[in-house]
Image (cartoon, rainbow, N blue to C red):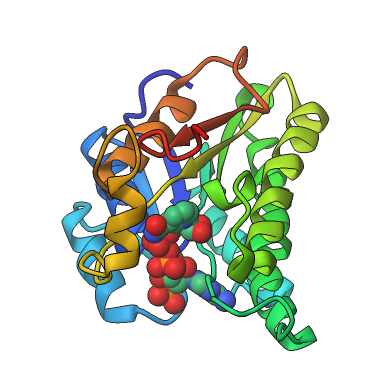
Length: 242
Ligand SMILES: NC(=O)c1ccc[n+]([C@@H]2O[C@H](COP(=O)([O-])OP(=O)(O)OC[C@H]3O[C@@H](n4cnc5c(N)ncnc54)[C@H](OP(=O)(O)O)[C@@H]3O)[C@@H](O)[C@H]2O)c1
């Protein structure tokens, strides 16, 4: 896609934490950022303001009907869609022997099902662009590759995101690229937790990452030519090197 000036890019779950960092970074690059949020309205308003008065979009991504309405609203209010960053997700910690059907669905409904339908609706809009061009970046996790027993449901959903990315890259090339960024440990409120510090401290980087470092990975894929598609960029300080 090259330079982002004037490009319309939707970031899901952009009110707080990593999504907010991505939105702020894209706005600094000159993109017209569409800020999606679920329930963090005040934080979303703040992020939108810091993105230079970006447009706000609310949708519960558990509901495919709301996803369809979200993309219709983006088209109505911003006229087009050049990029999509699927960042919204859920994360829970449960012993695999105790995971219920509801626990499994709670995570998969957002992390994998919503991510797919956002890709689908995003691609349908991007196909209306001159040349049908677009860029999709899905946010997975190092949990897609590492075995974290108390997060089996989350790890499975994020592994699904990686393979879904590969399949959609094949389906929608050459006009639309689909890539994945897999973050390592990126703490915010939880940064002082000993478990988090131990995990991050044991990496080659020797520290946790920041939202802006994830945003840099996203930016790389958004700006890249269509020769880079179906790929995963692990932004993890070396967490995956075992
Ligand atoms: N933080 C990390 O260490 C880390 C590590 C690996 C991967 N990741 C991945 O990086 C991404 C961002 O991580 P994060 O820690 O910043 O995420 P997060 O705070 O857990 O969630 C991001 C946002 O997702 C939105 N969301 C969740 N369910 C939704 C629903 N049903 N409808 C609408 N929005 C919904 C929420 O928006 P509202 O608040 O507006 O409801 C939330 O703020 C996620 O994909 C995560 O899996 C993070």
